[in-house]
Image (cartoon, rainbow, N blue to C red):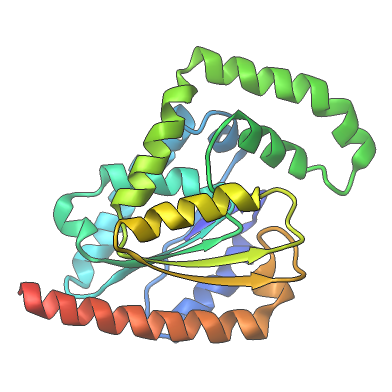
Amino acid sequence: MLSWMGAEAKHLEKICDWWRSLGFEALPLIIGPAHLLCPYWGGKLAGADFADNLKIAAAKEQQAPIFFHVFSGGSAILAHVFRRMEESERGRIAGCVLDSCPGAWNVQTAVDGMLGVFREHPTVRDALVGPVAKGVVTVWALTFEKEWEDEFQALMLANSPAWKVFQSRQDFFVNPAQLKALIELKRGTGAAVSETWFDTGRHAALFQDQKDEYLVHLEAWIVTEERRWKDSYKAIS
C-alpha cells in the first residue's frame, strides 16, 4: 500500500486492517515531500526499499497473489517498485487499485500535489505558488525528471494485468482527461480496467467519504481478479 503525501500511519492502518480482514498481509509505505518534488531520485530509493521489503513478505506466501493499493502520488513510487521487482515477482501481481492517481507524472502534477498540502490554507498556498512552481521546475530540470515522465507511463502500462480505478469528479488535483487517456492505453495492452467514479469525495479520501460503496466495488473486484490470477497461475504451473 502506497500512500498519498501527508498521510500518517494511522490513516493507512485502517485500510490495512480491511485488507487483513480478507486474509491478506498488508505492507504500507508513507509517501513524503521528496517523492513528489523529485520522483525519479527520491522515488527510486523509496521504491527500491519497498520492493526489497515486499520480496521478503512475498517469500512467506509463495503461491499468493500480490495486490497494490495506491493513492495519489504513490503511483510514482509504484512505477519504481515495478522496475525493481524480478520477473517471477511481477508474475504474481493480480492487480492494482489506483485511488486518486494522476494519469501522467510531470512538473504540473508535482506542483499541484505540493500546493494541495495547503488546500485548507489559501493564503499560504497563494503565497507559495510562485516559489514552489519555480523550485519544482528547477529540480526537474537539474535531475533529468523529464525522462521520468515517459518511463513512468511505460512502467505503468507494462505491469499488472488489471486495474481498479477510483476517482472523484470533484478532485481538482487529477486531470480527468490525462487519467482517461492512460486508462485507454492500459486497456490497449489487453489489461482489464474497472472504473468507479464518484460525483463527490475528497482527493485520496474516497475510502472514508464513500466507504460503503467503495468497499463493495473493491471487494467484488478483488474476488474477480484473485480468481482470475489463480486460474492463470495454475495454467502456468
